[in-house]
Image 1 (cartoon, helix red, strand yellow):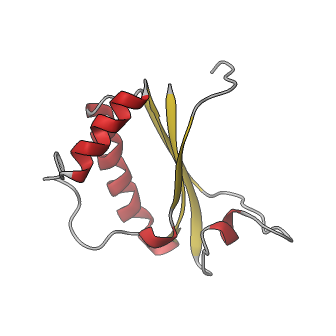
Image 2 (cartoon, helix red, strand yellow; image 1 turned 180 degrees about the horizontal axis):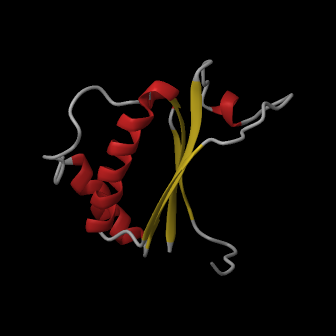
Length: 119
């Protein structure tokens, strides 16, 4: 199992557009073998004295912190999906217009679970 994790910020005014894009990407991921997708909109992200999520993505005033992850069954399935993404496969219906966030400030990574407890 592999988890792809992302942290970013979105202007509050772009919430609806972000949710549409997130819904599209969640379905795209599931269609490409993902086991689970979760998108989270900030409800309480406190500012830290040294570091915090807001500083990590250089979120300006008026932007909310977003966290999301996609659970993949294995690295091979994720690699195949990444290859399809790089080729633009399956993006014919992606919402038009500019992305609802600044992708240059997005933080992402791939993680192997070390501990899981029930849901």
